[in-house]
Length: 264
Image 1: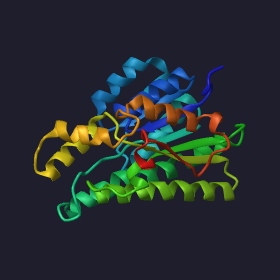
Image 2: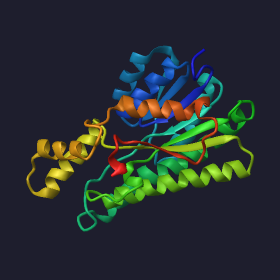
Image 3: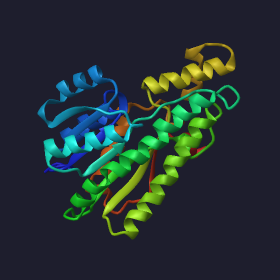
């Protein structure tokens, strides 16, 4: 028996990177997965590689209508929903003085409003399935080490991820108080070798005035005592753990997967 046999998951921002790798590992673990993203062609390509256990759904996480449609599609195809992974996010890479108000509003819409809308839309389905599950349903929110400690590169990104961290704890307590049997946990990656990771290197280079991305990558590497940067697989394994019954006694917790970055 696999760790996620009989489970159904909805993952936002899963056309590529951490989300796509999470979908792959969840299917290997026995789950059915609905992949949501705005990158339609990339998302369809990802699903083609995953087979019949996956479907692709257009999902702009800032849209309540898109979220409601995505949840309905997952229910229609797979008959229920056990797991929500709020994975979609964006990185700005600008300091407080450089960022415009419009950029801030977009950052909040994706990183905070998207998590709120996803949680709210999926809640009834998760609550229904949680009643009959040994350890309830599960929500996993993608936060960041920047939601635990300050960020020199992007204080506004850090602010949004700090919000995700506390929203995770607060909804875990709210759902427990209401007897909903929905566990809510967050995961906090270090610097991961994805498109967003590349954005952090570019931002670090730009802020230093050198535009030397390779030097910025080496600096980031040196902040990880484990001796390497993270991969999508490193984070996906943590997400699968938090979504599974192996984490049945965890709620309101943050799993730090950062190669030792925040231990310093």
